[in-house]
Amino acid sequence: MVSLLEFLVELLASTVRLVVFVLTEVALRDPLAFVSAAVGGLIIAGTVGFFAYLVFGAALAELGIDVGSPGRTPPREAVGDAGEGDPRTGN
Picture 1 (cartoon, rainbow, N blue to C red):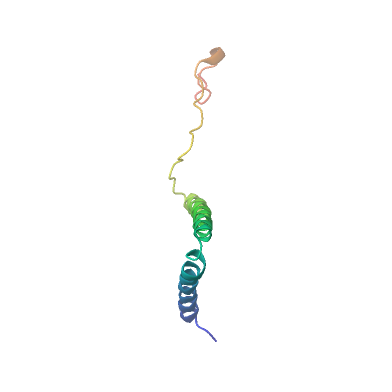
Picture 2: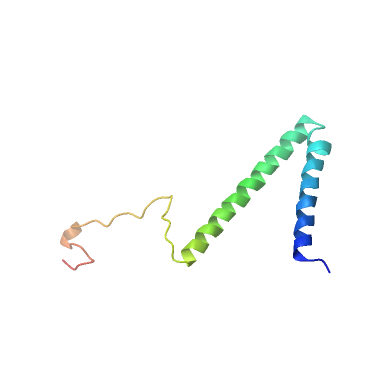
């Protein structure tokens, strides 16, 4: 039976062999193939990075760590509209 360490080493080694093969045998043979491989790699890296960002943010939120929001903040409540005052205090 294969141990976890042997599996990870083989996975890493085969990934390196795959990258070398794609670069030497596929991408460098034709300029269009290089552009296609580069754009595909950027798209994959971008989507994986964005998904990792979402998962990391969700994990921090589950742990109760507030990291804020890089997007829009919720609109502030209008105080004094129609003579109602602040709804939180009842004034």
